[in-house]
Image 1 (tube, rainbow, N blue to C red):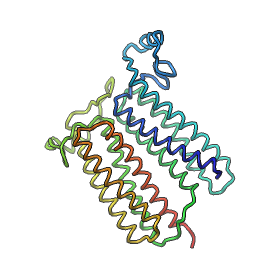
Image 2 (cartoon, helix red, strand yellow):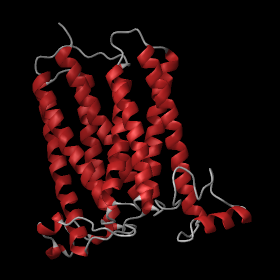
Image 3 (cartoon, rainbow, N blue to C red):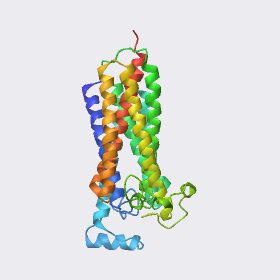
Image 4 (cartoon, one colour):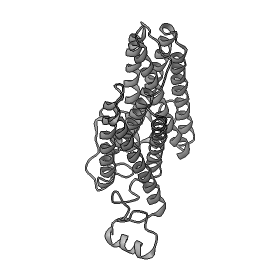
Length: 331
C-alpha cells in the first residue's frame, strides 16, 4: 500500500478514537438529545442561533427545549462521525481497487457496513429517545469500527513476527481474553446507557450492596417517552454497576493469565512487550475506575476511563494479531 494510504489509515484510527471519545462525552454531559432530529439540529445543519432560526426551531419542535451547549456537543460529535465516514469510504475504495493479493478487502467491506449501521444506530439513538439497547449498541459499534480500522492498520504495517510453535495455544488464550474484555465493555455500555454509575458508591463493593439481586438484572427498560437519565429501578442499576465491577476483577485475572502464558511460551520481544502493555493498561484502568468512584464520578475522569477502555481493547487486538501472525508465518 502507498504511503498516502498508510497516512489515511492512521488518520482514520485517530479520528475514530476522537469519535468514540466525543460520543462518550455526549452521553456523560447528557447531550444525547441536544438535537431532537437527525442528522441536522432542529432542521438546520448547525445549531440555530439567530432569532428567526430559534423561532422556527421552537415551532417545529415545541416539546424540545433548545439548549445551545448540549446541541453543539451533539453536532460536533456528528460532524466528526461524518468526517470518519468519508475517510472510511476512501479507504474502502483504495483497498477494493488494489491489485495486491494481501489487500484486506473483507475487512474493508466489513468496515463500510459497520459505518452504515452505526449511522442508523446514531439516528435511532435520537429518534428512540436514548433507548438503552440502542445506546449500548451505538457504543459497541464505535468500538467495532475502531477495532476494524486497527486490524487494517496492522495488516498493512510491516512487523518482525517470526514463526512460533507455541503461538496457537497463546492465541486461544488471547481470544478468550478478548471475549472477556468485550463482555466488560458491553457491561460498561449497559451501565452508561441506564445511568447506573452513581447508584453504586463505596469501594470495593457498593456501600448499599444488600440491595443487589440477580433477578433484578433481568429487568429491561419498559417503554417510555424518553429514557434520558434512566428508567430502571434503583436496585437494578446498582446490580448492573456491581456486576460491572465484579467482571472487572475477572478481566484483570484473565489479562494476568495471558501475560504469564505469553512470557512462558513466547520468546519474541515484540509480542512480550505487547502483552506487558495490555497488563499495564488493565491495571491502570481498574485504578482509574476506583478513583472515579472515590471522587463521585467526575466527568473528565469518567471520559478518560472510556478512552482507556478503547486503548486497552486495541492493545489486546494487537497481541492477538501478533500471535496469529506467529502461528501462520512459514519457517
